[in-house]
Length: 124
Image 1 (cartoon, rainbow, N blue to C red):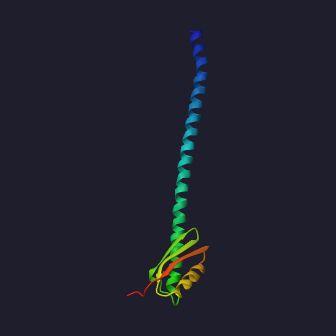
Image 2: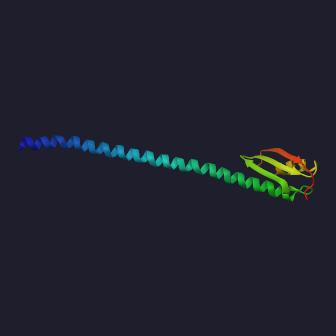
Image 3: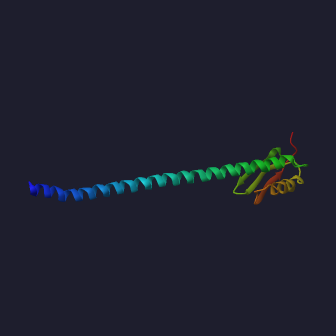
């Protein structure tokens, strides 16, 4: 029996080591999975927060255009992306085109204004 007991004792150490290694590997793999999931959630929220900021900026620019004297902003579309504003659509006379661009540039957060506004006939 002594040889069997000593044999079991010699196998206990490697079993303990193997179990400890498995637990370590499992914990490490779980931590990597959690880190990847957290990273992907942060990456997913970054674009959505940027989109929200772009929508807010476009709304502020559109509001400024609507309040600008001498400018009919009803047919002007405002798009924003990372502080870059694109104005498109049409106005009834050429004097309104620079008014729109100047008004957009005055809004906080606007870095650059691309003015694609065209002159069209008077609205009905």
